[in-house]
Amino acid sequence: MSDRSFRFTHAITRAPAPSIVDGLRAVDTGTPDLAVMQAHHADYIATLRETGATVVELPALPAYPDSVFVEDTALCLPEGAVVMRPGAPSRLGEAAEMAPTLRALYGEVVAIESGHVEGGDILTTEREILVGRSARTDADGVAELARLTARWGYAVREVETPPGVLHFKTDCSLLDAETILTTERLAASGCFDGYKVIHTAEGEEACANTIRFNDLVLMPAGFPKTAERLAAAGYDIRQIGNSECAKLDGGMSCLSLRFTPRG
Ligand code: CIR
Figure (tube, rainbow, N blue to C red):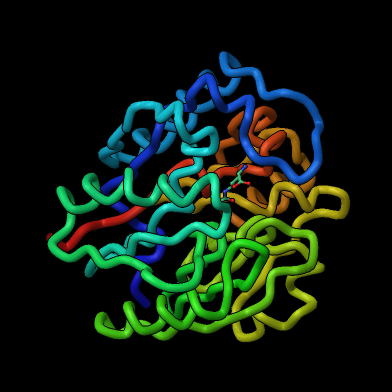
């Protein structure tokens, strides 16, 4: 089995801007502290680099408070990149800001032109691209994504994001070619039937969003029972502070685009 869904030569990140205090949030649990977020972000980037990857660090975009969450702006596959069309009106312009960087790294860059899709709703596995419909991603956008990625031989499967959950990947992440970390509420939908599944520990649903990046699994700090489960399953985990991004419903995957461009 190939491992192209978790082995990457590159990542793109964007520095958080002072306007992060105005970032979108479902529930107000406090104002994010920029300095603390910057420290966590630096730790995150250093951990990606620890695996030998090239990390492209883009400058902050103060006009877009949520622009540190670059994952929502694109889907990066080995064959090409798809520029997203975020469903949050305040985030629509972030995708166009990302496009030139992708064009510099990729031979083929296409864009969603109708409907809406945010990258946080997309889980790419070895066998398919799962896309969760959510408040940010609609059926039109999923159909457009399916059409755009079919040229590279991908199959898109539309699934549901649990009610009240921001993105599909808020509740799950890929751990290796056949294993998914998921909350029990998402797994109950049956969307991972046929995969190996590890559940987040009870009360630790907020750590389902991790990233497998080369030999490491980056997970948010503060979830000891799930961390123990992952370590016991043989994963080399790194716990990264995420307290400030969590105030804006952001996690490990949101902070980077991860890919191996074929050129
Ligand atoms: C938003 O609501 O769009 C941001 N505050 C959080 C985005 C998190 N991104 C992600 O899960 N991929």
